[in-house]
Image (cartoon, rainbow, N blue to C red; front, top):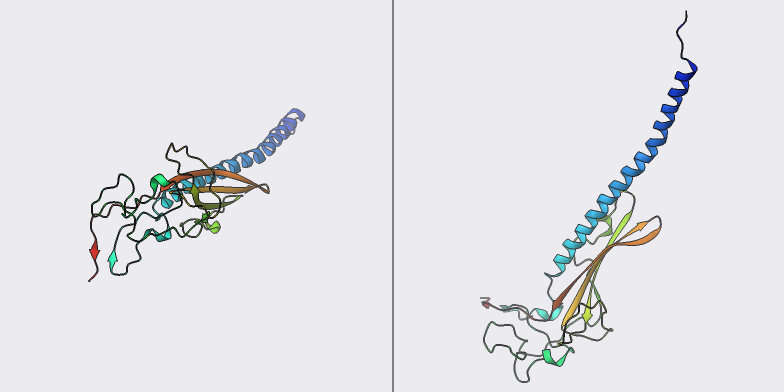
Length: 210
């Protein structure tokens, strides 16, 4: 008697091999999607971090006093925004401001913002380099912009519409978004916004430079 595979055993072995060969590509595809999903989640966390970083920036390049002999806090700027927030004539205060030293005030001399249109914060914010955002299979790009929005005193409605170039107000909206090129198509993964106001800073003490 000679030992050999029966026809049924041979067919069963072929079926098992075929099932394994069919499931391997599916497992690889599922694994790839999971890896890319993890990268997308990291990208969303990065957007949140970048947005938090933008809120720590000075409101405008002219917000800091350029006096070389003293170090002072940021001042309020004279904008073309709503008149309710304008400087009270002959003072350095807004309506309701406190006539005291080291409080939030306008500069003694009228000082206007530098930016009059939407500004790009890319390069100013760390982590906006596209070379740091290559995913498993997709390429991610991050961008941060800041522009003026209406400062109507009747109510703030978190508008997403920026004002036309050349128009300033007392509120700036920062938008940070991350996009991925997936199968040749640009897709927005996440978009976050923050709003900062032209309020200056309280100056608890003025440090005199010797």
